[in-house]
Length: 295
Ligand code: FE
Ligand code: FE
Ligand code: ZN
Image 1 (cartoon, protein in one colour):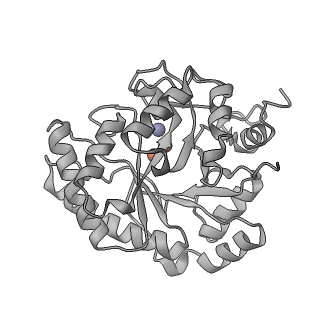
Image 2 (cartoon, rainbow, N blue to C red; image 1 turned 45 degrees about the vertical axis):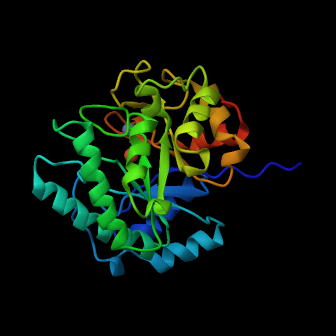
């Protein structure tokens, strides 16, 4: 039996005058066949009009190179769980509706979202607020699924357990348009034994949410011990998870149809002090080969 090719890529940037066309080119330079981008700087909500994103050119380049899917990540400062500052919640809802529209226009059907942080009000209040926000966003957008990311539990983050994500699913009326983005660093940091028992973790996920809800993986190693609730990504094979468990997850046939996205940190360039280089080309090659070749 012939193995299906892995769908693997990384986070890429979208800037300069080529915008999305440049993103595709960056992905191709890593040997990727998928990618993830932010529609602008992840730390703010300033966005260029879609007419300036070079979408048609990007799509042509994707077609020529058989890239059939990519995903969009919503910016970090979106917080649907904020009940302490209503302005933040309101702005988040408005921005997400726009973001869903941009995702669609760019040609993706999946928008990844950090569920939010309750900023002191407690997980129960936070989840209630996320549900309310998602109900509004989903009813005012169409054709896009929102993938809730599994979080590390840093600060007051919601989504540190599969049960918290399930509670969000339970409250959202249009929950057939919810999915999960499974981040390996975050689940490890939240306490799940990704390194020692990836099958057990997936079985647990299956019982709570169903494996068919995973629409994208974030494949990252972690700088911290399991359960540290820290969220610091490490390059593949250089953290506390290690290459083998991640390689095992990446190659599971039941997920061969969904994108696997690396968000590993850039490393110092030995030839140019102060500069950094992306690890994606070699990490993608390792996963395609099934081993850390060339080491
Ligand atoms: Fe994320
Ligand atoms: Fe992530
Ligand atoms: Zn992270």
